[in-house]
Length: 116
Image (cartoon, rainbow, N blue to C red; front, side, top):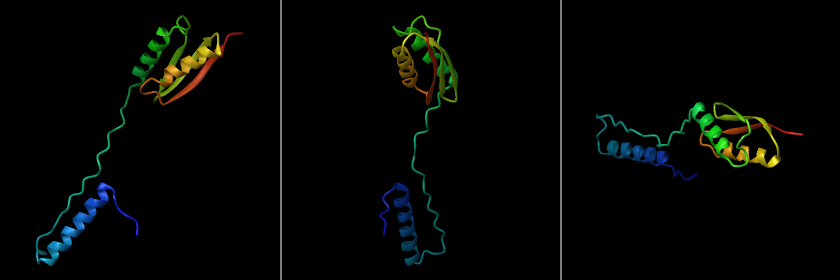
């Protein structure tokens, strides 16, 4: 038999046990209602796409090796697209790392082109 260790399972077992005890004591004329609260979970923080766009763009413009490059940032439901032209693969990697580190960015789509 599997062990029930989650808070919800423990509450259900406790409610069932209390119902049995009250029934055994002859207290069956009063209905027993057990309220079971669902385990509290922290809601995922929703970050507005405009905020993500602003944070990524600002971080790219203030980065030493990316300053001066026109990298367009488009964010849709947390998906970040980086569009533009840079000189080196190091700059591509840096831009992706900056976008990935931004709160609210779920996935990064690299559409950066290397100059020839």
